[in-house]
Image 1 (tube, one colour):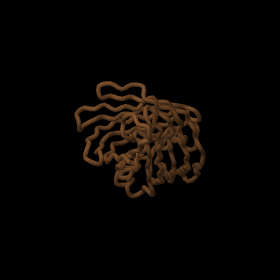
Image 2 (tube, helix red, strand yellow; image 1 turned 180 degrees about the vertical axis):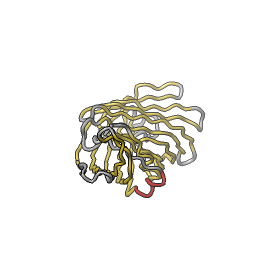
Image 3 (cartoon, rainbow, N blue to C red; image 1 turned 45 degrees about the vertical axis):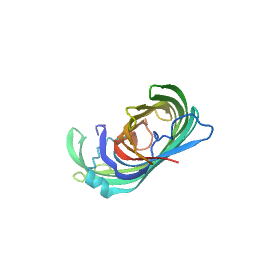
Image 4 (tube, helix red, strand yellow; image 1 turned 120 degrees about the horizontal axis):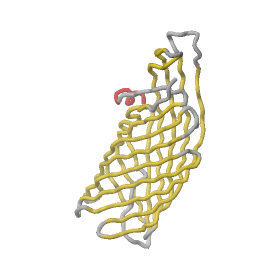
Length: 255
């Protein structure tokens, strides 16, 4: 089969999420730790390339039906110029369908199903390296952990004699990551937040980017933005590449 990247569209389409890596505690120097978290809905898509070349496409209405469970969470603490953070994403999703594959120079329909359980966590520390005119910037470093339990089952209904079978693998993936997290005040109410990191280890490459616009209320801040998280896994399990991406909206809470 021909290998090609596919969008498993909107794999966490209306997941209630508690935070994300870029969640931020209240800024400013302090002798005590200040903590914060985000609460939001993430309309994320799940994309990737399978090691078999199977192309799986899940429209938003199907992924809502087939999302078995999804959860995201994070917390950030700050004390003076230092910060600590940890986030997590868990999902359990599956679907089946038919795609065309090149078999012996002929395009034939292939029936395939997949089931994916995954856990992703990014944990690290940050240090403020820039603060001027309403803009702050932290350098960050830490690690990203990925656990996948993936199964792909494919067959060719029109060619009963053709080989078919199931590919299943469970494994862990650890990567070191470095990045930057920033914030820019636009007015006394509006401000921007942004985050990006990149790293490698067990993955050939992993990276993520985040940007959001925020509005301050009395006790919480409203936030809306976009996040992208990508893994180049090489030959890790049934997937060569995985990515999560999509818009989100919610509230930011300090405590």
